[in-house]
Length: 366
Image (cartoon, rainbow, N blue to C red; front, side, top):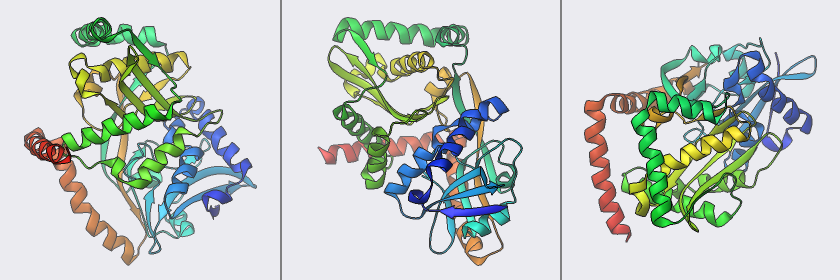
């Protein structure tokens, strides 16, 4: 393989165009998972502006780019999926039929180990190092919103009826319900981030927006606009007041559900659920075929989804002491977290404890 590694700013316009074309054509070749916006050049370049160590490996055949592999690396040769911790799709974007030798690719990239937690399906050379595979719910919209809503009524009649009734009640109590699919007001984005930070604190979770690089990344993506890619802010209003919002990246085929939040003052109306239904309607009208709800077990995802796709986590390594040390440090943490998340008898008490801690943190913040 002819493999060359570039810094984000060194990637040529021709390579960006070729990468985008591979993504756009992927669903036609039976690899829709490669169309995810987290696998796009725009996402990689945005992370590169906010994080050190971002690199992009380009594999060429006959001078033509046939595969693109974005990653982050340390000076010691530890590699991570780009945006690890916030990226919901990871892997190599490649032409149909292309395969690679994982060891050769890592060697060319100067990596002893490559860690991932949302590896998309079809990445067989990397899947050999997977420590677990997990469901990631999606909403299929390729048949249009009316077909999706009809299917939702059949699968979850009470959920659908209740959610639509709450939307009507919200309109009666708080003013006409209005949905903006592509809101360009930066103030609305700041409101969303404030809601999300408060939600993290209430539930005892780590506040992602307390990490400066994530805040910068969201701002970068909000202002990123190209033909196939955009950072999309969607807002649900009651009267003139925003009551729920979501920000996530989109390509022509997929909208990734990334940062949803709502105003707790309107919680009884389930504005987050109303927002997701409006997002599905807006996405279908925009020609988007899928909402990717992201890995993680949530009741609202189970209600909204049409099916699950699979993502994997794990490591791919070369024989190297750095790889042995990194895996020895990370494996127990991963195993413990997954044991808690996947077992209700462990997750429920842990979740209650985090929420108690969150209440204390919220009181202290006031």
